[in-house]
Length: 356
Ligand SMILES: *[C@@H]1O[C@H](CO)[C@@H](O)[C@H](O)[C@H]1NC(C)=O
Ligand SMILES: *[C@@H]1O[C@H](CO)[C@@H](O)[C@H](O)[C@H]1NC(C)=O
Image (cartoon, rainbow, N blue to C red; front, side, top):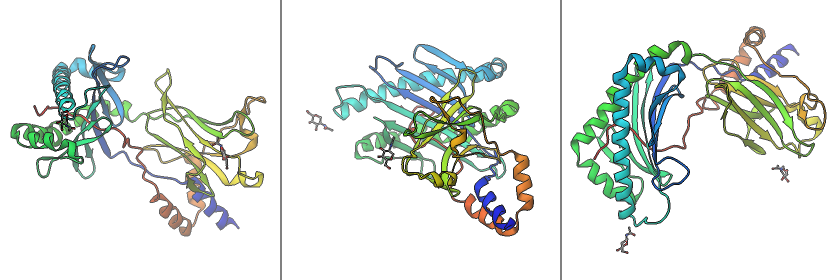
């Protein structure tokens, strides 16, 4: 029936309205003394997940293309960042030495990371800030701005925690940075970057399979910004089994690509139509849905087909118009299932204002 079809369509569309009210400014610092192939120190800054600049131990802070003009007009901001980066470099270097001695880590390459930043919700005005350190790739210390203390998740961090906790000016400046300075910078950057930060470009999506026994790769290329999630669904439900997600990678033109594989070896021919691949760009209401369909798969064996399924906003709106309230309930339930922010949970470390 029409109602059932509509209900199926709406669950298949999985529209996830995301508004860009949450903004963020993030700083990452990585100290890796003694590594041959990578610089000893790397600093990177992001606004709303878009990189604004970087620096390393052999090169001073350098803004990315879109931000050059901003820093030409605000030389003091660049100066501040360069000064802070250098301070942090020295601080991380000294800290990693201390840790290596204290923990008897005399051999090999060690890595100390620092991540600090803030989030600002421009609807509620809520501000959240953080400052975290990672040592050897695991959480080391995190700042608690309520109690003005450092949290040590591992016994090996306790001595450092106690030393930093006893350094009141350091605690105050950390708090001041994440609660005041960082949000001020963020607002300033957002004001300047309003036009291009909200630029979004949809990719082209295709299905690729090397041989008939290989996984089917759903490949999206040409999207911007680098804030996308991809997943496979069966009967409209996200699946993880047999799915191998890939990282997003930069293209030469400033856009990004990403792919996600599905092992189809145990999928029967009649079940193929139950699967689809979803590409979701954060901040956009419409997703790109690609049905698992043998006829559109590009392979090395035959001439590539050229079909890309793009569910446009118009189709979404049209579908929404047909669909009854029942379908909306189903859609709302579905919406809550998955967190929409593909935030990196993997990186630890950094922030400005060393504790030393
Ligand atoms: C480091 O080595 C010294 C001497 O070899 C030892 O006394 C100390 O307990 C070691 N510390 C740790 C954290 O393993
Ligand atoms: C796909 O799944 C089958 C079992 O269902 C397994 O034997 C095979 O190794 C998997 N292929 C890949 C590429 O993971």
